[in-house]
Image (cartoon, each protein chain N blue to C red):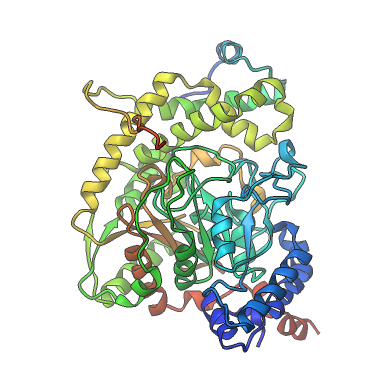
Length: 62
Length: 481
């Protein structure tokens, strides 16, 4: 499991996301960010370029 | 006879024979809600006058020989994310605290057309993810087996109301386990149908590609009765499947002779601890109950074979990443412009979606396709599979943490990801709190899942044990006098 992200680094991510957080919510999200890193690590792996996503486009009915 | 003690099937028979009036049935549930829900908090709105008026109308129709079927005159409830025309629908959030929809959820339209009566709206986690949150306008529902304990969520009020005998059945929604988790902790039956089997139209979305609507009931037979009304093509729900619905109730009697059942045991026996840490080991009582459930299925004539899938964390985290991305996209504007409108859990759990990239989301959907293919192949040689549900009893409600939903193993998420039908059925008790497993099918295999669930239920006594609070009111009063 990843370690908790440093406050300075997380502040950049928060700014990029366009969020304005009070101290309490900033800290709570910072503590939870390690789960995003775990999920990312779980799903990202080398794949054949032909491996299509699950959500392909389907023509809607008229 | 206390009508609130009857299952839907039993009440329907009594109503058909005109031995039970829908008015008496509604009145018995209303009396129970008045007496008990102050402690359970399973309803956020009780539709007393409307329910009684609908019951009187049902009584007239049935007396005139126009009975519509087994749901005619049966009081049910809806999770408060199901839109109800002219009736407040809050999604458990301050954001919609006074919201009065102009349309009904399609699944409620179908139940009403089958004669069901809406008795009220059930407490839900905020937007079906943020709970139990003591800072929201409605207090979290409590487990009827022990009110100090958590009923699970997010269809918490729906499960509690059914388990405590405050309505005959209720509708929930399930994006990662929100029907089956509460069904397990409350000791009732909960079905997440196949993706596309039941319309999602008119239900507040959490995650478009993972959301499912389904029933919570006291028995598998009642679940089949509800599904008969719910399973239909809805051309206005883009995910709805144009597939015929079989006779679910007829499938129940088929027994298990010659059935082959896959057992996905590595999820709880190995993967939970390997992927999520030692706190996720199944309790000894759960392991024993699961093993005993396997023996019961074998004794009924089924052949059990082990199935091997990718590790549980692959299914659970792929589901969670997709859910996070889709849910955050839905609420992004409010997260940026008025974050104070959200409760603490909703904000913390979905706010993490702000930090995902487009590539993360696409990679998760590619992993999803791989896992769906693997799952379909694994289920080819079997009729259904069984899999753990929560692997221990309900925790205390004050022990539930904000990020427990991501920290802990989820045994339910794999079937949201694959869109497969999954039924939670009770398999035992630990410390007087219920335990459950899941019966999982191929897409559109609800009939097979219900058949196995019914055979198991009929062969065991778990459905007969109900929480003390579910006892009839006269019996409760006599016990306290």
